[in-house]
Length: 177
Image 1 (tube, rainbow, N blue to C red):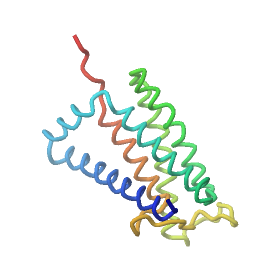
Image 2: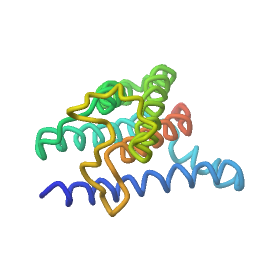
Image 3: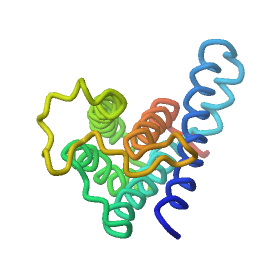
């Protein structure tokens, strides 16, 4: 697969992630019964599902840097600093059924989504860039546009948003008798 094909695949996943995030938010606001059903459906699976999202995001970022040889900019590195530990910690927490990880994972994903949001702003509006990024590898370069829209920072934003949504939607599964 070439970079455009991978970007389209990951863009498709990012579209799905964005739809899930918006769908959960709308259910919370407009359809309490549907939201309750979603919470029941995800009960106990939040760290596992969020960990799966983090693993795919980590694999995608590694493929873009190691497979396509796109050098990560400074902001990409900060996003990686937030995403990569989630790919390890969340599946481990799911395996151990440790829901105590949730506040820590939310804090890390929250930091990641803030960096990603800023990265999206300056990628879309390069004039707003403070120039703090490496001039030889600026944070405003668009290496790919999966499905004509999904740049690497946009995909990261969607992944962080889905991780946060899944962790907030989750609650411990009912105890078995």
